[in-house]
Figure (cartoon, rainbow, N blue to C red):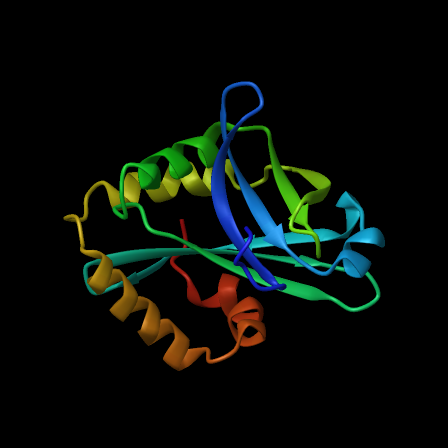
Length: 165
């Protein structure tokens, strides 16, 4: 977190108790002061490009000015990949741990996890695809970025252009 610029987010595994996949968010302290959980909107999708499955999870936090955060889940990235998918297919809620200017956690927002069914179905698709490399994942992601060069474009088209499960 110490080196993350404001406006970025990453998924992480937490224990509260038991394993959960949550998000670490780096943002300006002034922005964090004015937000609450009811201001979080989450979108997700599955792109199958060639022999690679990409799962973007984006969320928007509203507080005066909106902030849009983009994360990507790679099932075959490492041992954490399948863990994230299992967590998100079963856990009841998702936490967003917000770190401000001092790089310390200033607030945690919690929302109901409405991604469980999506992640269960996504696992069922991915386990039938041969493992890909990190380079193949990045090349496939670059294809998505070519079509959607901005986070707003990806956000607006996420449900329309991803595989239906």
